[in-house]
Length: 107
Length: 119
Image 1: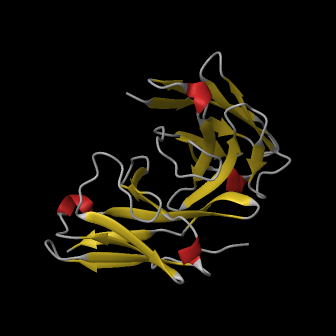
Image 2: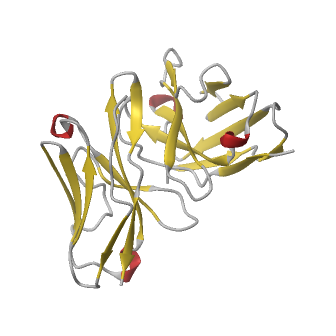
């Protein structure tokens, strides 16, 4: 089976840049999607197909994907960005695979 | 505005059964692929099952295969998840979600319904 590896936590000060990684074997050959989940709420799609943003998602949030690592980048981090973030891909025999999630803490 | 509303969650004994529903509105339900995703308390997201728009393709996670059945009624704009032989590790919030293709991104999510398996 295909495994996506995310750091359990990332901490950043307001106004700084947060980078959340999602590691997988040759993940650069796949389309990666990212979700933001705030406490007590459902996940929200924030990046799809590696780097595209749904309408309503600020351009402070961006994605990239190459080699064995995909990265979600949040520039000028705000307190409201504090949430869990999950990456997702598909792989043979499994249409949807999620990473374990990363808790972003804004210090 | 696209909306998904789950219902049917509750407390069930181990070995029991439960049927979840997901009512869709604000979009053409029959045109979209539908998924169930669950999240155990304090844990990450786990994909459960998917059904194609035309109902002719279904996939399941290994953890639920043979115990859960995904179904949809396009005339009623409703998605279902029939769960049987429930176990403690099935305890979770269950979300329904849409995508445009079987292995695509999950675009719209419901707010979830909690299933607790306990004696």
